[in-house]
Image 1 (cartoon, rainbow, N blue to C red):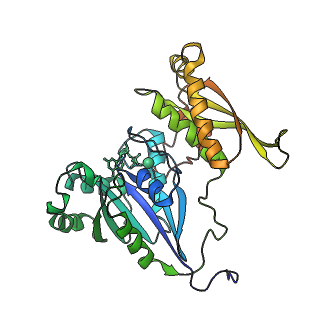
Image 2 (image 1 turned 90 degrees about the vertical axis):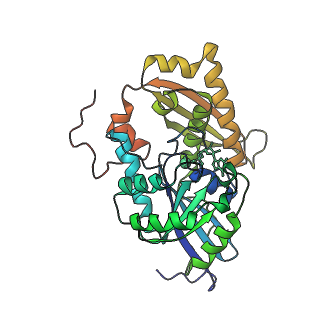
Length: 323
Ligand SMILES: Nc1nc2c(ncn2[C@@H]2O[C@H](COP(=O)(O)OP(=O)(O)O)[C@@H](O)[C@H]2O)c(=O)[nH]1
Ligand SMILES: [Mg+2]
């Protein structure tokens, strides 16, 4: 497609952001994009869908593809999560492989290679959480990366960063701008994602559930939108208010009681916090109605999985019965 209305000096690059759960993918993405697009949690495996997070530096568009953390599992939902990560590498010009520098390093490469299963194209390694180790620049990382290249030969170079203290992230941004190829922007209108507001609403609700709930409960939650309407404000006819009804699906009746909380206190708190983030996103008042529904084994239910953006994977279980 010929795009005539774009500046001739435009450049673009698509970069998949990969790594095990909890290495800091979402934190880095949010920092680079300058917005809370991706759920950050101290609990692993919060991100469930691949999606684009876009920012521009001068005339260069950088599209980061956030992905769920790869990990081994035979559960249907986890197979689909891994597939999302693999698909995140398709069409990418470059992969960023995040490795937590505060954990044992080489095994992280080995595990990643086992789980990604596909051959990776150009790859840069980002050693993350540099603020958590003393004298990170004295670690023999060059040697470690040489050994990592035996596992993943497409590794080109590495950076040592801290998203928390914002160390060296500018070096990464500069290198991404240099690596971008001349060409039209995929998001010339200034969109920051390929996902719509409905998606981010479900993510904000899930984020607060992860923040406020303990143990297995946040993992056994899915959020679906029942109704989403933008209605002209009575107070200001130039303003549209979002009226949203959403359901929080849980696996068991006891979880429903936990999510509702005593006299509804928990669901109220999740709703208040999520609504604030929705309003920050839309810049307009929002009304958020939350319901909690028991949907036994929703994480094996093809219908629910597709509804939350997780289509079948190549290695999906072939026989599946609703139970
Ligand atoms: N100390 C430190 N913590 C970080 C850094 N980046 C992320 N984290 C924390 O690591 C946890 C997981 O981060 P998240 O971005 O959700 O990881 P993801 O699962 O890879 O997307 C969160 O508690 C973050 O606050 C960092 O640079 N330094
Ligand atoms: Mg994440």
